[in-house]
Image 1 (cartoon, rainbow, N blue to C red):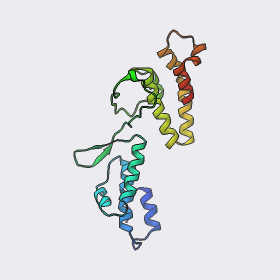
Image 2 (cartoon, helix red, strand yellow):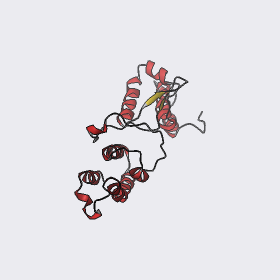
Image 3 (cartoon, rainbow, N blue to C red):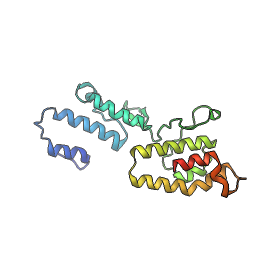
Image 4 (spheres, helix red, strand yellow):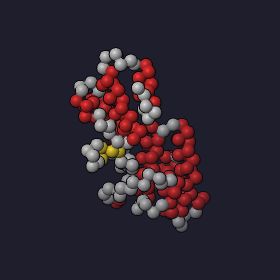
Length: 188
């Protein structure tokens, strides 16, 4: 029986694969685990069963690997289930050695990308460009054409603000000759 809260992926599977199908219950458990991570950002209570059943454990680990490749980080919760952190981990794509260690973690997932360019969050232009590089990387890997267009338009509209923040004495006519602005242009 389907409940109103059953994810569409599982509903579709149940309609096309009757319970008499070999491995049906293991398949449903696996799908519930994947849907729990994707829809609720928390591991399912069925994860330990999937990992022990010797059928879908490798597939589940591959899903986790894809999420980690995109920068997802799983953290332990009080209930023993792991939860995806709100903020993705950024790779060091273009940070300077002068920037030093890890940047501060900020779980504010409501931050607007355009506002970020002018925010005080980044302590240097290379840290700021590194964060933007990670956003572009994830958008290229997982974003739709519409998301890529919006990202490009957002970055284009804030390029002037970026140059004014980091190069306040430079004429706007000559900002495109600045290496970090050239890098930002390449991201766009």
